[in-house]
Image (cartoon, rainbow, N blue to C red):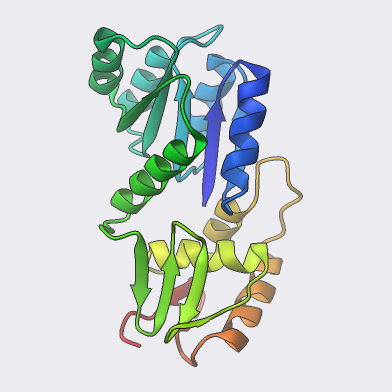
Length: 220
């Protein structure tokens, strides 16, 4: 899953990137509203962490522009001022949730997980597909209760498929969601990760849809 952080304060931005990456997400960062707006409008993020008090273009304006353009991805806003007016303005602009600074990283991660789950129609913190279970809180994957050992890229591919069970996901889409913006992407490597996952998962769980991509088989 790929997250955009839009935060102008360098230390906090670095802490957010480190914290979000620590639970298996890929993170891009923008340090002003103009860059953040452009990245959020042109890249396929699974969620965005957006500061309200940004230089060049404030967070409320950025968010309104995204929503006006039809961008429906989950957005968690950050505010430095604990005022109800600012929270209301953010929610009215289209925010899905908010946190007031200072905050605990664990709470931000929990709220991010919840936003991503709800966007995919999942109510539980555990994603289940047949014998396969992925715990979004711990990033642990198991088959019939037996834990699997996955590399970071294998986990990212599987997590994205688990958030979209039964859907056809193209190689290009997987590539866009498992690599950061500045990474040298190669969609061919997705085939390698899929092949590795198939060796660790029950047969037929990941289905190849010829010419289109892959699908996590919910009927397994």
